[in-house]
Image (tube, rainbow, N blue to C red; front, side):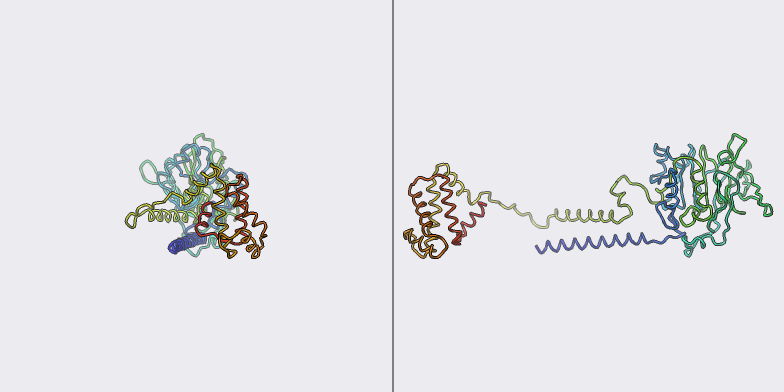
Length: 467
């Protein structure tokens, strides 16, 4: 027993240690501070670098939005046909592989719309459009001291930007305030001789009259909200938002679809969406094409699982604790099943009961209606203990035994003598029925109980087995 208690206490202590370790690890992950160096752009994140505010606003405003929690190749399946706009915000926690990028771009070629909101998108997510190549370059890098929850610090030294030209993406937008870490989107075209002819995305803007002269490739077409007399869509990228030296918002066609590139996730993040017309620009960028808007959560570490139990407890230490418990149980079963000594023979259990003979005799007496014999077996023992209780000999007259017992107890001498006489008459051959036999035996047992006459150890054991 002590050995079992020790094992139980050891298991309880081990479970407590495992729970404490998993709980501590879980709390440490939850208390991780938001940083612009390692932002979490997930729509589940309600902190400064997250985009939950934008997602909740779109959902409550009646826009069709969803969180895409499967691989990008599922866009080519039946479920992806409902998605019109696919949004990737920031550098994902799980890198997008090149084969996944190929599936995504194939979906765009079939008519989808890809929105990339990142300071430095991967090159394989920015395919060439005709002879035009699009790239993004960093202009500044955040540091550990930059607080994404402090808009004044994030926009220090940055002036609000006005749209370059009226398009669907800049509709109802007067000015936009990006962070000081936005990147520059550049594109250039290659001539037939193979030399690259740079086409800066900047525009010459007159400081005096406030007019804006778009460069080649910045003129709109019918897909960008500006009238186009030509029925052919130009493959040149279109700039919608830019500074005097860098473009921030560009889109260009790809197959039957289009790709939109915004070089500053701060505009959509929880910490910056409330500044100026950042919210309106975000709505225009995401909803300029009607249909379902899907936010990529698969590469943000929120991939779906086909196990409902695992999905419910995702992000908690419950799954880790369950796995460790399973390992402990397997270890216990394995150790219990191993042999640590020589094999022992199986115990020989005697199936026979010690009362088999008594039960057989009782059945024979009942069938033969030998009630006198049954009473004799019981009355002989009762008379013996009564004589002992009275301090007389076994063969003493029953009247004397009854009188002596009555004088020492609360029993009445006459009733006790009648009981003894009827029992002796039945033993000597008097007529008696089965019911009368049971009554006599019951009264004899009551007398023993009232006098507190204990049975012998053998009879106690037999009575316990009968029960």
